[in-house]
Image 1 (cartoon, rainbow, N blue to C red):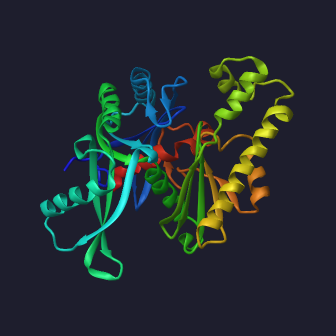
Image 2 (image 1 turned 90 degrees about the horizontal axis):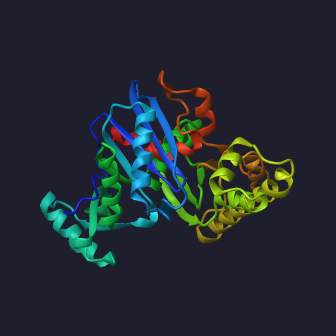
Image 3 (image 1 turned 135 degrees about the vertical axis):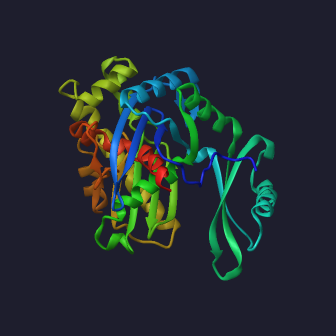
Amino acid sequence: MINLGSLFGKANPPLVGVDISTSGVRLVELADAGKGELRLERCASEPLPRGAVVDGNIENIEAVTEAVRRVVKKSGTKARNVALGMPPAAVITKKIVLPAGMSEDQLEVQVESEASQYIPFALDEVSLDFDVIGVAPNAPDDIEVMLAAARREKVEDRAAIAEAAGLVPTVMDIESYAARAALDRIVAQMPQAGKDQIVALFQIGAGATHISVMLDGETIYEREQPFGGNQLTQDIVRAYGLSFEEADTRKKNGDLPENYQADLLGPFLENAALEVTRAIQFFYTSTPYTRIDQLYLAGGCAQVPGLLDMIASRTRIASAVISPFKGMQLGPEVREQQLKAEAPAYLVACGLAMRRFG
């Protein structure tokens, strides 16, 4: 079996989650605080130069490796095992039904045989993993198996970066799965543990927005659309003649001319709210569902001033900016003030770090 790196497995502690996104690298280390609670031991982030990661593809391995080295050093972690994420577009997942009662070896052979039907590459070019979900609905003699496959070179790029930064790649997850694992923790803290509540997660990153809609722990809808915070940065570049890096820094610091809010930020917020309402309408028209009970914003763009209020007012849905660390104890190394500002961007890294606990 060509393994995707324990995609569905449980990692032995200690382990850090490292999220490599378009805009930067983020690291999270969690610990067991007892009684089913988690403690945030460390988190840190490092920006990436523009073009180092494009559409989930690593274009500049040296720059990303250097950023991972810096984030490990900055965090102060001693852990060397790492869980990494693959962008959803780079992984093919498929639920298949197989006869129950097979040995592990027989199951592997059968999964590889089935995989060849769904994967548009030669099997020796892919990393493959599978997980037995359980008994197939309405077929007690069959089992449901989740199959996941990615181009081997994409998996190896990320593994090579981790190794070059002195880490041991232990788990390779899918970023959207990691985000949902972190979201599940938050939903569990809702009244009645979120039972029967339809929860939508909008991860607004630098270049794209990933939408997941969940009901009782199941994903009922998923989609990605090309809208992100880089659009606002580009507007700033054009308006004020700044470099992309300087525009991005000033956007985050709020260090921009007086006309910025009216001329650039306002139209960007309108556009973002339009993208979200369109995505919700698309969800309603392409599924049997006609409501969303709770909307969460995540990603580096979630904290843009005015975005939450604009989206809440346009969608008329209860909306909040998510903090994946809600309800966690905080270790002595964590700076609470900084965490409040940056928490929504750590959703994927937090979900990856949770792989330590299965």
